[in-house]
Amino acid sequence: MATVSVRYIVDDVDAAIDFYCRQLGFQEDMHPAPTFAMLSRGDLRLALSAPGGGPGGGCRSVNRRLGSDYQVSAPSSGNSAPNRTPD
Image 1 (tube, one colour):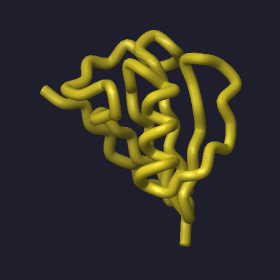
Image 2 (cartoon, helix red, strand yellow; image 1 turned 135 degrees about the vertical axis):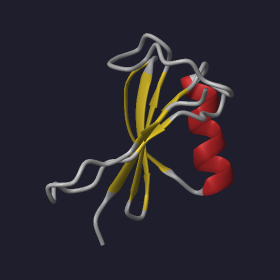
Image 3 (spheres, one colour; image 1 turned 180 degrees about the horizontal axis):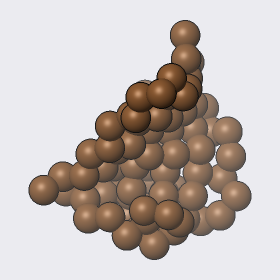
């Protein structure tokens, strides 16, 4: 199965890491800066970014504490993956 990557914009990266790892069974793969972390569970990769913490980090979010914006990407097959930002 292909790996799927999802990006969440969160206000508190450390709190989000705690929630996703302790409550949902994700593994912390990297946390190189206070504003960014990469988690995984099976074929799902979860990138957590603080607002302004990188490309797209300034996106508006309905619930940024645990994440609600997402971006889905898959291996290139000539089709574009959908992006979603709440209204």
